[in-house]
Image (cartoon, rainbow, N blue to C red; front, side, top):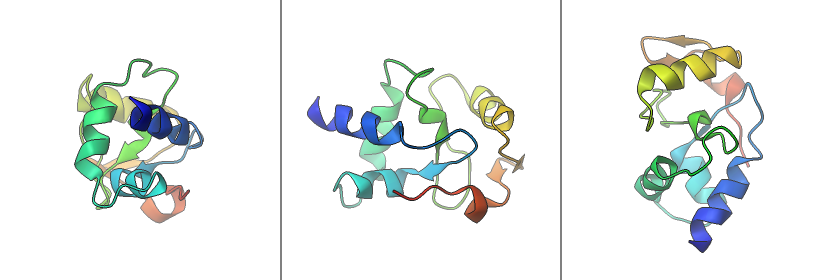
Length: 99
C-alpha cells in the first residue's frame, strides 16, 4: 500500500495538458522496469477523478489502457488539450512531463 500512495502522490504532480509514461512514473519512485507494476496500480486507482491516471501513457506515445475504457481516456486527454491521432499522442515530446 505504501508504494501505491507514493505513486499516486507523484502522479498528482502531472499538470492538466501534460502526460507522463508508465516508465517515467516507475523511475520517479525508484522502480526499475516497473511499468507493469504502475499499470496494475493505475487500474486500482480508488480516486480516478482526483488522481489523474489517464495522464499515464506508453513510452512509444500510444494512449494505452484505462480501467474505464480507452475511449474515456482519450476523451479526458483531449479535453485537457492533448492531441491524439490513431491512438497515439501527437506532439508527444512537447506534452511529456518528466519528474
